[in-house]
Length: 130
Image (cartoon, rainbow, N blue to C red; front, top):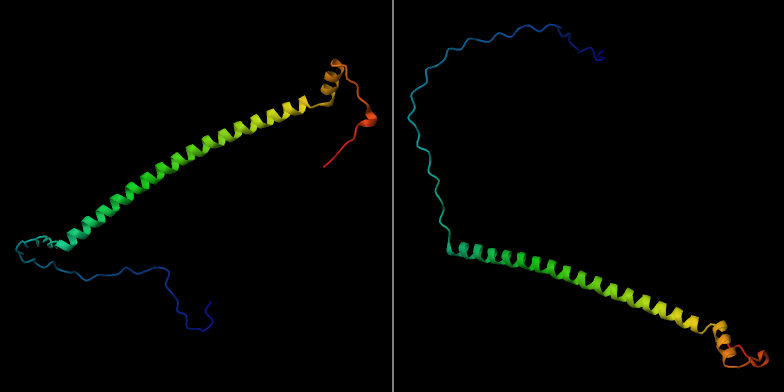
């Protein structure tokens, strides 16, 4: 396997490792250590003021986020209302335009003219396009 002929043969069965016997040493009696007391460092006036100011800023930011969400919701509701009104007026205008076109139809005008006893001379009619 090895090409540089430096490889060594490895035994397939491992020999058990012998550990030297260690005699337990007698443990000296230790006096119970007093646990160090957790000492709180005093908070300076500047730190108190800084925490108060940061707390107030945080409260103001929370209130402003909530009020902005409410304002956005109200604006969306108002926009939906205006879109509904625009749709209503568009439909009214379409219906009115269709009614105008029906009233101006040539067949209707011919019927009204015949009822009134009017006649139509095609030679005197001119079509004008814009």
